[in-house]
Amino acid sequence: MGKRKKSSRKPAAATAARRREPLDTAFTCLFCHHDKSVTVRVDRKEGIAQLVCRVCDQRYQSKVNHLTEPVDIYSEWLDAADAAQKEDHGTRRPAASSSRQAPAPPSVGSDDD
Image (cartoon, rainbow, N blue to C red):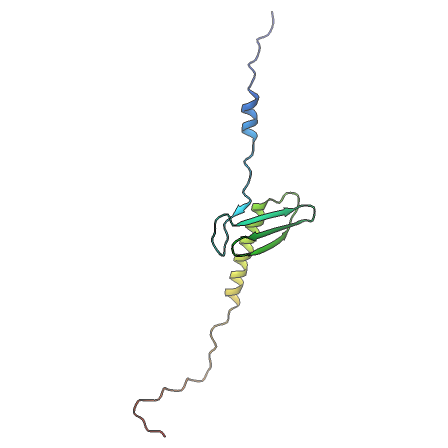
């Protein structure tokens, strides 16, 4: 007598579960708000990624490593733009003011000539 034969799994079902969905490489621009107008090119040989908006020509460049994906560069750009905006608002000086009072407007009907 022999052992019972185990049922074999279908190989197609196993590979479908492991298949990864590709990540996006086209994104929405922060400045002109056009969908899928921002493209990211990753040059792993040079170690540089370039982000470019085709509509408003906004550009961003960053260093990459072997794990970097285009979505990582887009999120770095979002963070850099947010940090620049916060820095711009934080360093703004209030409108120029003087300790002297402004001269009073001349009254209507006065004869100071």
